[in-house]
Each structure stands twice: as C-alpha cells, then as structure tokens.
Image 1 (cartoon, rainbow, N blue to C red):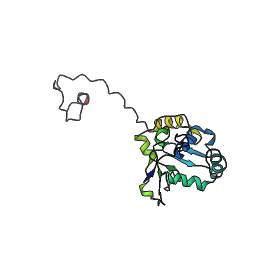
Image 2 (image 1 turned 90 degrees about the vertical axis):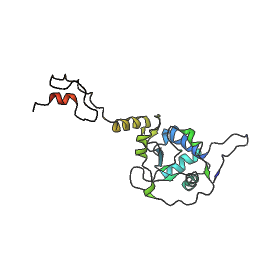
Image 3 (image 1 turned 45 degrees about the vertical axis):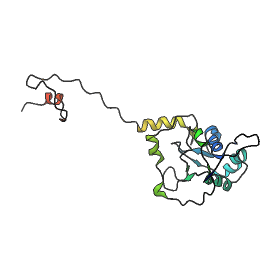
Image 4 (image 1 turned 180 degrees about the vertical axis):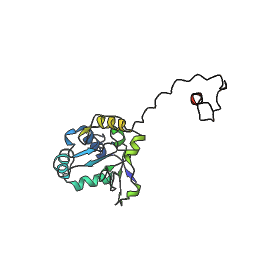
Length: 198
C-alpha cells in the first residue's frame, strides 16, 4: 500500500524526496564527486557518503546523516544492485530516469517497505534496456562527463554499421532467361551473370 504526497500549509504539494533527489542529480554538477547518475541514466550512486552527509544532506534535507538518507531511499522503493559489474551498489527505480523528472513525481512512498533481500538473479541489465529504450539526451553531469557526451558515445559504440549500397545490376546475357528469378531463390541475377559457364 502507498501514501499520498505531503501537502503544505498553503495547500501546495511539497517537493517529495524523489523529486528533490532528481533535481540534485540533474541540476547540481558541483555534486558529481558525491552523488551522480550512472551513464545509462536509469540508476544513480553515492560516491562519497561523508560528503553526502556534510554537504548535500545539510543543504537539501532536514537530516544530516546517511542512515536517514538511506531510509528515505528504501522507503520510496529504490532498489540496489548487488551483482558485480558497473552498476554494483548503485540504486534504481523504474520511474526514476534521467531527463524524465515528471516520472519522479508519480512515485509513491511505501507505508511498510520492510527489508528486501537482494536477489542478483533478478537484477535488470540497465545497459541493455537503454539500447532498446534510450532516454532523452540531456545536458547534465554523469560521473565526470555530460550525459549528452555519454549518450553520443554509446550511440556511436552500438550503432550498427551501415551496409554498403548494392552494386548496380549486371546486364543479363542472351543465354539467361528474361523472366525474374523466383523469390525463394537466394542467388541473384548479377551472381548468375558473373558465374563462369559450365
């Protein structure tokens, strides 16, 4: 079960934890050495816990210790990667995506999140998902480089090589039939025309 957003004294919705965290990750490049997006934009990681407490939490949250920050993370349904790989110990949520802050506002806080046991076998491959469903390109900091640069680099890395244009058709000789080959034959007219006579 879930609870609704916290409403302020003037009837306006206060910025919930996921929205505030999304803004910190996306709009504060000065925090990249403390907390940052993963390169695929579907997860994030804490780089320096001490600075998170003394700088980020002190400036943006009511609490100033990592345990309270982590309780918020768990309470809003974020999951953590425990498998080996580039996402090890990073966090993710299906509605928490770089360049899509409106989705963070849809997230709901869990009433009784409980303790979730890690299951490495069910952890998603966010890099593979990003190849099929890329996120919008945005200019924000991600692990020391702009997300736009990372997105362009990944696009160049995984973009399929364009095939060469087909060669111009070879004129058929008089010995070849005038009608086209049946569609189920794999050898083309040009190959048959170039083949040596038997």
